[in-house]
Length: 226
Image: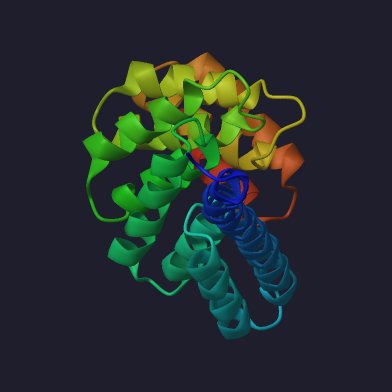
């Protein structure tokens, strides 16, 4: 016969390991949440420091990524700092890491495109800008269209460039200074031989950036159209 005491002890022997497992799981979850919270705190510190102390911001962003490698905003911020430092391969690495976390991260696709363009990798840059624009929820698509227009013009696709700049110029509200977009558009119209369109757009630049560098460039191009 099995004693009553023996039966009574068996459940306890089974329960103890189960309870330890649950406690370990809960502790692990709490630790993960704490790491994510601290990571976001370092990211916010970095954003606050960036305008006045780039090195301190860089350290904060690094700490954020160490605590939570899946923090896409911190990856993006690190890429931004590397880009400002001229360390383009490292910037590219961080933007690609951010995109790997969230493939619909249009801001990272657009910034990656700029980094690639600055390395002379124009076709890759164009693909990156187009990927940014594939997201219908991208809040500032005119930024990607502006850079796409530049890249396409560099590669000799003037009609594609024209379409990109026309779309960028129609953005409301714009995230790119309108005078910059209109100057680029006017230059493309000029190269395509669309004299009337070029003159109309370049005159707008002269008004938008009165007395500025862009207005001066527009005025110089206007003299060639006369």
